[in-house]
Amino acid sequence: MDTFKNIMVAVDFNDSIGELMVYADSIAQKFESKVWVLHVAEPEPDFVGYEPGPQYIRDIKANEYREEHRNLQEICKNFLSEEVKADALLIQGSTVETVLAEAKKLNIDLLIVGTHKHSFLHNLLQESVSRELIKKAEIPIMAIPIDE
Figure: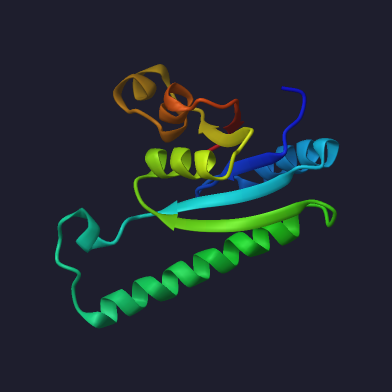
């Protein structure tokens, strides 16, 4: 593959998003790519087998999701060059499966993720999302080390 038409940056609001976006912007400018910035939110409680709860709780969650989506749009605006086409996506679901499904649906050519630096023991005991993506993805992945 000599070009990346569609690049996806999978972000968690705890990550150093700027670091990931710098790479995405650089590659997107070089290949005239579109950048998709994706954040996977927790699934609705009723999706995972719990009662949905009172309406006011659902309203609070809806407001949180709207705010997260606005934040993603601001990330695109602030970290990507004006000539780079970008879309922000906020989707509920299981993180690894949702990222992979969206990547397939959008014909993503490159997935950019952040990886946290942890000790050997921590890595041995806890499976990370980025590691799971690397294991399961069928497209190239760029894993960027992120300082805690």
